[in-house]
Amino acid sequence: MTEETATETGAEDQQIDTGTETAETTQEVATDDLTEGDRAKLTEVVRKERAAAKSAKSAAEKAKARLAELESAELRRTVAEERGLTAEQAAFLSGTSAEEMGAAADALLAAFQPASGDTPRRPREALKSGTLGSSEPPDMAAVADRVLD
Image 1 (cartoon, rainbow, N blue to C red):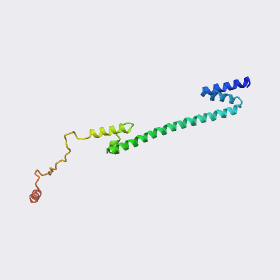
Image 2: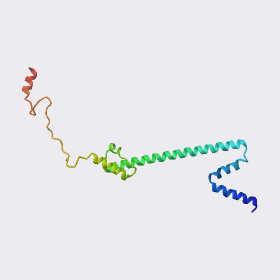
Image 3: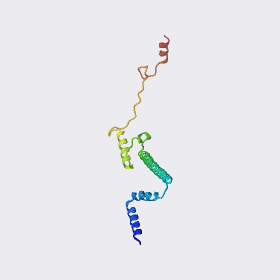
C-alpha cells in the first residue's frame, strides 16, 4: 500500500466517523470536477430532494396525529358503550387510556345518580282542570246555562 493510498483510506475513515460532514465533504469533492451549469443543476436537485423530504416528514407527522385522534375517538366510543353512556355524555370523557376514560365515565355516572337513600319514584298524577276548581266532572247543563246566559 502506498503512502498516498493510506492517506486516502484514512480520510475515508475519518469521513465515515463524522456522519453529516461526510455527505458535505463528499459533495464538495465530487463537485470539483463539475462545470458551473452542472453544479447549478445538482444544487437544484438537492434543494428539491430536501424540500420533498421535509414535506414527507410533515405529512407523516400529520398522519400520526390523525391516527392518534382516531384511536382516541374509538377508545372513547368503546368505553362509553361499555358503561352505557350516550354519545353526548361520551363527549365529556377524558384520558389517554381505557382505564382513565373508564374512571371518567364512572365519575360522570356517579354525578348523575340519585343520592343514597333517595329512591327514584314515579310522580303521582293529581291532575286538575286549569279552568275548574274541582276534580269532579262538570255538569254539562250548568256549563251550557252559564255560557248561554
